[in-house]
Amino acid sequence: MRTNTAIVARMKTTMLAAVLLASTAGLANAGGSEGSVGAGVEFNTSGFGGPSLNYDAGKFHVGGFLAIDDPAGDDNTDFALGGRFYYHVHSTAMSDFSVGLGVAYVSDDDPLFMDRASLFFIEPGIQLRAFIASNVALSISAGLPIGLADADGVALTGQFNGLGGVHYYFF
Image 1 (cartoon, rainbow, N blue to C red):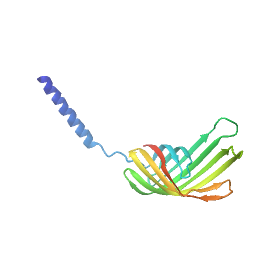
Image 2 (tube, one colour):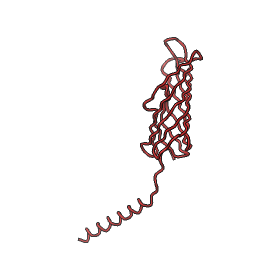
Image 3 (cartoon, rainbow, N blue to C red):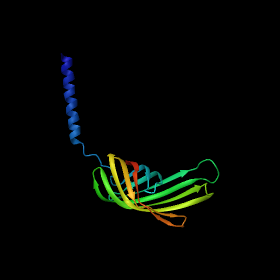
Image 4 (tube, helix red, strand yellow):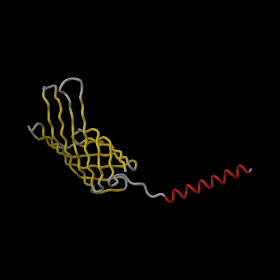
């Protein structure tokens, strides 16, 4: 009988300690905390993207991506480089709605025409970020990519990119 009494006493002590610990804990930092850096992958509205870094400054976030593809063969390396700036129009503890601008440069080997295409995109748009955990964000972007292809012309198109990116924030 003493054994059961000792176990019950330990359980009560453990429960009391757990309640005290939980009552003194503060709220966890919500996603998009000021000064946090996020690492992940991101795509712009024209469809180009790759591994990326984001910096959240509180009222806005900035980020960039770099993608490199070097398949077998000579002189056929493709790469894409881009950056974004989004101002947070509205924020909650676990999400934000932003407006901003992205730019991207893409150098693409085109074996069909035996030529290299150099594409530049300017992309005004919006972004929604939802933090599925306090430091993991899924983003959805929509915008109006303005494509300049080898300075030969301009294409205005609208595109919704279902999943714009995912980032893990360190704070």
